[in-house]
Amino acid sequence: MKKILITILIFVCAIVAGLLWIRVSHQDTDITKNQTKVGFILNGQVDDHSWGESHFNGMEKSAEKLNLNVIYKENVPEDERCVEAIEELISDGCKIIFCNSFGFGTWELECAKKHPDISFFHATGVEQADNLATYFGRIYQMRYLSGIVAGLQTQTNEIGYVAAMPIAEVNRGINAFTLGVRAVNPDAKVYVKWSNSWIGEEENGEATKSLLAEHNIDVLAMHSDAHSPMEIANENKVWIIGYNVDNSALFPDTYLTAPVWNWEHFYEPRILECLQGKFRGIHYWEGVETGIVDLAPFTKNVKSGIAEKVDEERERLMNGTFDVFYGPITDNEGNIRIKEKQSMTDDAMLNDMFWYVEGVVIDEAE
Image (cartoon, rainbow, N blue to C red; front, side, top):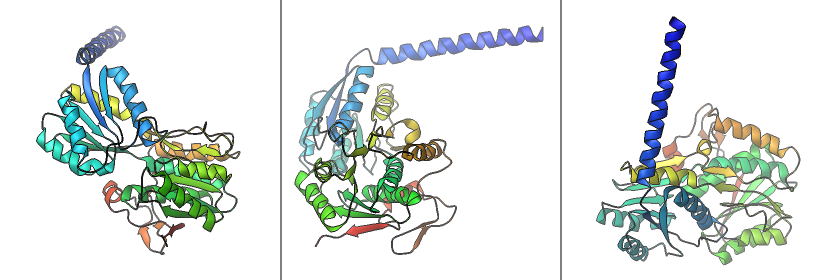
């Protein structure tokens, strides 16, 4: 009799769960039945094979799932002129607005205060409001893994890194990458040159040329959205670790991999929350376990045995037994920054990363 009662109880629970699932599914279908207008402000283009395209790809996948009409504003300046673009999107009926670069922050916050009925999202931003959320992914986790690739691939032990500007986000990536390099190759150094531009091809190209001229670089990584570093590395037969999207098809003989974005894993659930009236003006910082960040597939150029080591470290990141900034960690001036068995807090990683780990060499402008 007891077994019969347990069987009946399980059966009833299964029916209830099924009905609840159907109800939730129908609710989501009803919410997305009418097309919603979403506005998207970009500092670059949707087909740039870089930062802009990564957002476009993720948003288009989300638009298909949620019945969205997405209006894109490309090449918008990161100054007060972006306000006009945002106001145009609101006038066009957009109820949700995304801005994809740090420099839009001040002006997007102004617009959020002016339009409390609109849901705003700011990529890489730091300041939230009741109707403004900021978001990013823990791309530093993928930079750490790509650093392992560089550390095992290099033969000269001199690795180049073209970086846009010395803000906490970029510094965090440099440090994570270098920790990955030196985890497998403690003799290697990472030489950093600032371009002072996210998308400027000339500025990033000059930084790349300078690195290659001054050091015996055989692997080049980057944290900018320009293509010139990859093009110049390719011309000089230097191994490439890219960024944002997989550009291996453009550089088949020199490309290794890249930290890449899968923004649909953020955009779809957040937009659905907006449609359900569940928007939250918080900071989202999601990691490898969500799928938002990843490494591009390894090319034939990656040395044998590297993939296995990366898979081991990825598994540790996935299951939460390890994160990149776990002590002891020493900076490049010999100071202990993170003590043994201690982890850096999210707040410190986001706001206080203005130092560099052991192995980083900053090439200052002459």
